[in-house]
Length: 306
Image (cartoon, rainbow, N blue to C red; front, side, top):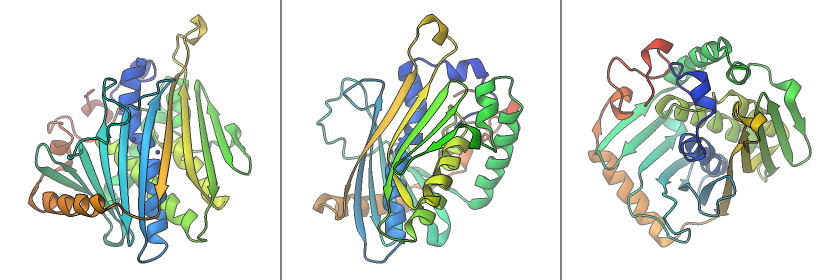
């Protein structure tokens, strides 16, 4: 299972056509596949996990995005791939990802690498906490009920929970997260911490969707239930819903293998080499924004639509 810019006009944010909606939010759902493996790896040394994630828009059979997430001894490598509709579903994907991310919680670092541009950037805990505060404040001041609701902090009224599923309903939006009980007792808390950070990273680097706080609230409930997510479904209704327009839908599917393929070791080795030689840049440069644009944690008026 692949986060908004305060300067975006709310109407444009929540009424995107399906293709653009999928592109904006696919990265958000891809995080689920990544954090499942990362939590399990952190729970014990010597663990190898392979997580394939596919993101689907509406009823399309072909995915709009894929990720391959590889986990070893608490470190997670997430290789992100964005697909066109013409790409065959059975295609194994390109040798070089559109982006790959190193999650290294022991060293408190998250490194993003753009192989095409040969650049990398690093995000620290302080940046994420500043984003959390500024993004929540901005969203709660929005004129749109959906954005204002997504700013939180309380989502208890719209939350429903069963033994294996949590749903959260808000103005024109519905989240559905299916989870399973974790084998390791420390996994749910590990998963929650990792997932929250990963969602904030996506909101910081790739703005353009809803704030991540509803999903963060769901993560907290899943962890409290002793589980980890295995599937995610997100539905958003546009303001044209009264005219019969169907909601925009994204869903994610995950395949987990408790070992690596021979090619995975080569992929990680190649990623380590690419990361070592990539030029370090600041976050704004990496995200393709100028100094005047800034990350979305800055003043709302400073951020423009990408």
